[in-house]
Image 1 (cartoon, rainbow, N blue to C red):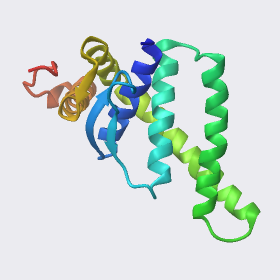
Image 2 (tube, rainbow, N blue to C red; image 1 turned 135 degrees about the vertical axis):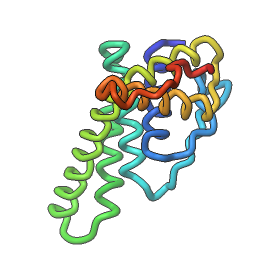
Image 3 (cartoon, rainbow, N blue to C red; image 1 turned 180 degrees about the horizontal axis):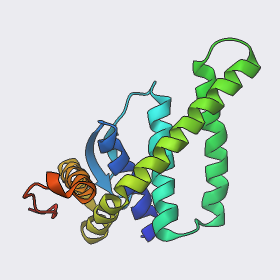
Length: 168
């Protein structure tokens, strides 16, 4: 299994937890087990944010994606923009403009999540590589501990005596 996919799956899971979504399981191999994130079908913005966060984490940790993957990403952008347009009302130009605005917001949010929780995504990817699947409770624990670590790093006076190991 390519490490790039591990980073993508880990990035999506970390973003889902950060957005308050329920992660049941994350899988390193979609043929053996599926990644299960509870997400409303109507919540296109959250779906786009998860996808963009996964690709951003993949890009930061694995480098450049394969040409085939980049082509598929371009196609996915078109599909997601179309889905966002369908949720809007009014003339076509107005719907397109609003869809682009929402997509840009999702992209900004995905980049912020990636910057903030990149270390958590790395930890989840390492566990995925070792075990093949990871439960949602592990992802939640890793994200929680990373947020604590970030807070204490930025404000040493607020440091809690929490160990920064997710397996604790």
